[in-house]
Amino acid sequence: MSAPRIVRAGVLAALVVAGLGVPAGAQPAARLRAGAATSNITPPLGGAIVGGWAPFPATYIHDDLHARSLVLDDGASRLAIVVVDSLGVPRYVLDRARHLATEHTGIPAERILISATHTHSATSALGDRWSPADYDLAPTLDAYQAFLASRIADGIRQAVANLQPAQIAWGRATLADEVFNRRWFMQPGPHLRNPFGGMDRVQMNPGVGSPHLIEPAGPTDPEIAFVAVRTPQGQPIAVLANYSLHYVGGVPQGHVSADYFGVFARTLARLLGEDHAESRFVAMLSNGTSGDINNVDVRGAQARLAPYERMTRVATRVAAEVYQAMQPLTWRDHVPLAAAQRTVTLQRRPITPALTAWAREALARPVDAPTHPRERIYAERIQGSAGAPPSLEVVLQAFAIGDLAITTFPFEVFAEIGLEIKAKSPFVQTFTTSLANGSEGYLPTRRQHELGGYETWLGTNRVELDAARLMTDALLQMLAGLKASAPAARPAP
Image 1: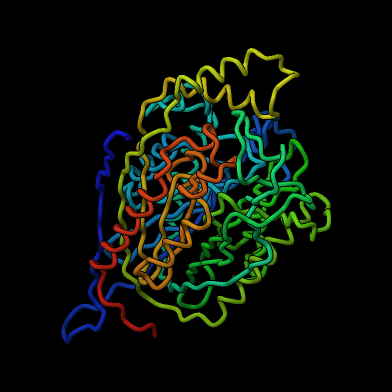
Image 2: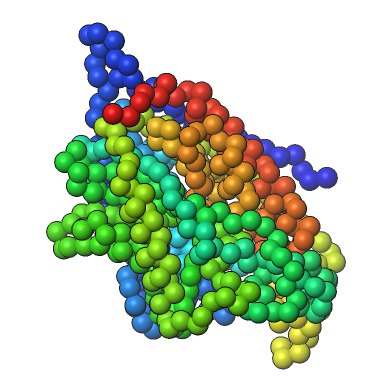
């Protein structure tokens, strides 16, 4: 049995705002204000791009990387949301960014949500992820991490400086044929062997057209959720969208790119007529629950495309769906804002004596004679994790923007987890952002753990098998608290 679990309640703030059915003589609700900004976070060439199995140096910048920020102010408090073009950012780097932003803007850290897009073509912000420093609560930031933290904070400061009267709306669209579950039940065979010498029941990314395919091991989430803000005169200020697609890729080796997340931002700006030099409009696309979702139809229904062509197609379609869904929206001059945060303590999966012995034997074998192509990588991860503390503290957040809710995980979250939160949320609309407040690996459900596959291997996943259940329950409790504390909704004008 695992050690006792600790769920520590952090800040829970729900702001009740006057003006919803204003009685005679009372002050009307303050008008919403919003500000947005972008910060260039492109790293210097030469750093390691770690989106694949073997890191390689960045040699060419195809498109700049950004931290895109949106700040909302309801007259009583503020929320800040930042989306960062990065594979993943450790919690200690984001804690530094939030500290700097709080110091300069006064926005409490628990009201600042920062997530990574998970582009696989960005120089790493993870530092030495497989060393004992990975488990240090406050390691020294390397040069790029320090730069990144300051630029994230700069973006929030600039967004605050750009605050202006605003209207807000939110909605959703659907794009089902660009998302595929990448975990497949397969017919028995050597393709199901894992690095530890066992056999899995499912395989991640089986070969396109494989004769061993049976069926996907989980669902997809085709929804594109979004929230948009504009001036009272109708000038776009920002759009925050969320789609559960891991990334697209198709990037030549050595290229730095924001992947389809960056193409989406540029395309939506163009559709809204905000792609000119004077525009301050900011489009941002956060990564939803895409831990088991990709853009590859392994049944062989996709043609090969030139570099950047597929991501451009996907991003253009996502942006077009958001643009169309924005047209009939009803805009509000005011919504109440609220936030909740909890720190949850998870148990780490143990490094057993048997695993330690396996790793030692695997690393003793000749490099060119492994029993599995990934054997050596996972043996090194097992050895590097041996001195880690038995537990891991993670930060969860829930934001309420009127009848819209946003939840977060510091993991690459499976689609079925996000679908459950949407189904059980007390809010009219809810979406989940992955890789927020950290980058702690994959988060399968217990059922998916039983099936095996890459995302469940120890070294890819590092926390207890019930971690998804514990955090999902905590987030649903947080949403219930926010909903219970919220003022009664008034109809949109």
